[in-house]
Image (cartoon, rainbow, N blue to C red; front, side, top):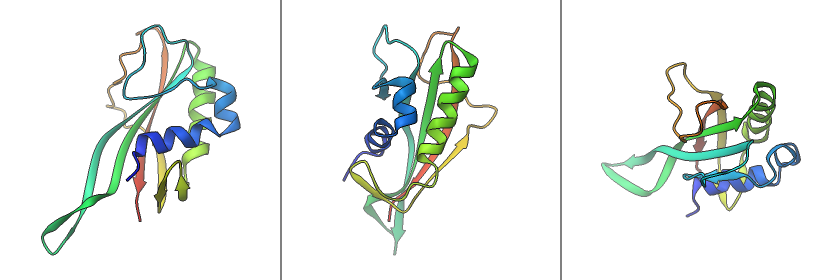
Length: 134
């Protein structure tokens, strides 16, 4: 089974608008030290499995992912965040190497805490992604 974060990253890498803004600076789980901005950071924060007759299947049903769009300028950060949202929201079928019934992208809740440990002087747009597998 494919990794949801890698699937989302692969999908963003082929989106022309996102690629124009960050080139290939899209990271899963760890952002290398000294990374140039802007960049996109992706990390899975939760998973739900189907429960059929009291047994948990080995395949995830719903995966929750955090995406952070990081830049040194507010306008550039908003453009990147919007581009990522447009590229992923409503995706279905083959996404990267995986197959998904639906991908939903929303803004994070107001109490969201930045997770990628980027420099505190950067602008960070955070997105909440829900990926449903068939």
